[in-house]
Amino acid sequence: MNTPQTWHYGLVADWWAAFNTDGPEIDYFGRFVAEGQPALDAGCGTGRLLVPWLRAGYDVDGSDVSADMVARCRDRARAEGFDPTLLVQPLHELDPPRRYRTIVVCGVFGLGSTRAQDEEALRRLHGCLEPGGTLLLDNEVPYSSRSSVTAGRWSLWTSEGRQAVPEPWPPPGERERAPDGSELELRARVVEVDPLDQSFALELRADKWVDGEHVASEEHELTMRMYFRDELVLMLREAGFSEVDVRGGYHGEEPTADHEFLVYIASRSASPTSVHMPT
Ligand SMILES: C[S@@+](CC[C@H](N)C(=O)[O-])C[C@H]1O[C@@H](n2cnc3c(N)ncnc32)[C@H](O)[C@@H]1O
Image (tube, rainbow, N blue to C red; front, side, top):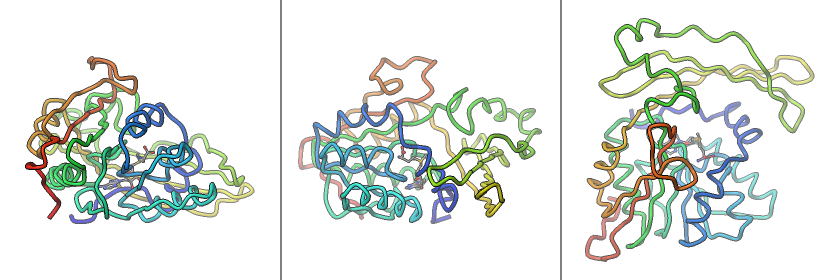
């Protein structure tokens, strides 16, 4: 698998552009960006973080594996008079035209990639930072119970739990109305769990209605790899980061077992002797 298996295309990209425009990550990571520019929003999606940062006057580029997400991000930015550098690149092939003081990876790490690609992604992220630069990477804990499509599915890691996989499709539920008046609905299910690989494979159905008439239906797939705190800290060190601090959630708290997301704040050594450029 060379191209990451992610579902952020077509109607799913429309969904993100229409509904995922807010959240505490914007201000939390934004404070680091304010202090360290230029910055890269790696896995920028439709610009949930990037567009408010452009509005704040920050010097920030974006990258994402999905050309559809990048196209919607560009539309959002241009609608506000901005023309940022946006690259269509997976994390493990990241090769931007400049180096950064800050790189933010929000809601991206472990999506669609192999473990080897994730390791390469961390090396690339390290290589794309200026000496003394900072990587901020969030990651949902494997045992999360609330936040995402895999939340509450920790029990599927056991051999008994895996008997319930593939899950049936959830029944149709609530449609969401987009700003253009169309309605969208997403439904997801787990189709494979591999505890050795620490990964889930999911399928997603997206449907669209205009004036009450069903006009489009799509199916997409996504894999997600889970990481534990100490494992990811070791991987970041292996990738070359000199210091790694871990915070709980998006308010800089000391991590506890109840935090659904951990934020890894990894520093590249200020010494230019450890310069490590992507190959
Ligand atoms: C959950 S969205 C988050 C988007 C944005 N960071 C935000 O917080 O609003 C995940 C994004 O990661 C992108 N993505 C998934 N796998 C990727 C990979 N291996 N390399 C780069 N981008 C990836 C998807 O295309 C999607 O835009």
